[in-house]
Length: 541
Ligand code: PEP
Ligand code: MG
Image 1 (spheres, rainbow, N blue to C red):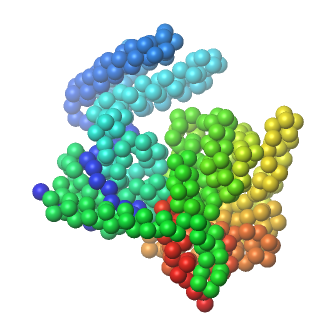
Image 2: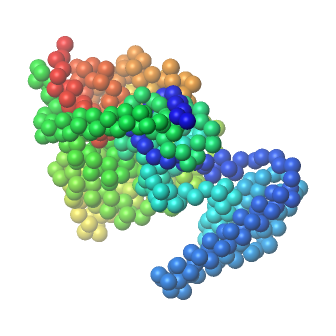
Image 3: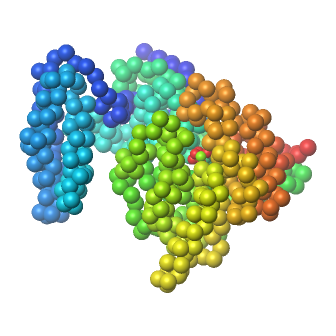
């Protein structure tokens, strides 16, 4: 029978498909007290056995495709699954501490990794990634999840308690039609990612796991989630989808037209992107350029740092797709909710106030140097500029300038060509940067105001915590005054100023931003033409 859940809209559009209740590893590995240790030990043995069989199959496949070298990779995995050094302590911990086997596996593996990483032998050190891999496979088999086979029966509506950006990056190519979460907020990176990718999403839905496998519809325009819709609902949504499609087609007639108000004020509309497929969408919607390439997503979909070559290929392709239009690449902005294991970030009490963005990059200068080399090299193939996230202090700017000069010298010495016109921009996301913008302007070619973080830090409200959404309002006068101050500093110092946070998509703010003197707005690809249509109907005060 049809069941309608009402929640909060996160990303517009209508998505249909089969429900897939998704549980993240983090939820599975939480410590739980169990009463039947015998049963828990059997769960572990069964999952280890299943993993062994899976690996034997994969190993055979690898042998067919890559010969013995391919199969060798998996033989060390198989050895771990027979190793008493791994199996015995897990069983012992289940028995002694009465804990779930997922927790026992992770605890034992953590201890083993610590032991291996203390060893001098590089080969032994490298073994820890094998152990981690094996443990992950066993945990996946314990959960009965089949997340890597989603594609076969897609499209899917992923239904989850919460979702982090890494989850979405892993699921995006697996027939993902829509996202439903129990907890979430409109300004979290997961929500932003969904909007940029044009995937309908709703949050605040109190679902039960028994909906797994049912057909459902997500209405991102209203914030509702309809499980097992009846025929008349399906028909109604069929019509709505047709209407949306014809509205989108109408908007396409605005391509190649300027973003100009009725009284003649022109403004740039750029696009925010996270991947090359978003860049193609930005081209299709005639964005004036890429205002924010969130480069961290190139890192989040990997299990280790991407190489300079990999980054270079992505940046070069983005530049080529955009032709002469600007492509602003933001350097790695990780930390807080954008995290993955290989960054090795320690558990921080307040990660949003921790080693985020430029702080991480300056603590790991080699990572930043690799990224700068890739960006400069790609600048030879288009109109590329660099944007630095989470700036708050002048010493960061000094260090950035030093690293830029050193990387450029290195490239020049090696005869590697790059453009002379790569501009330097700072994200204005901290109250410190907003207040100091007149000083920071001396070293900037442009500012990009990140209203998501600026609101979070100005209002002291976690952007991922929906219960303080009332206070974390991007329209709060304190935030708008800070923006006005930045625009004023920029104008006085001949520095271009853009807004690239979610406030740029809020049309109730557009007129005010243009009147303040903002030069451009950077929004999701699907918002570019809608915003153009709105601006072309505006008259300024
Ligand atoms: C912002 O903070 O407004 C911004 C654009 O950066 P991100 O959302 O990626 O933190
Ligand atoms: Mg930000």
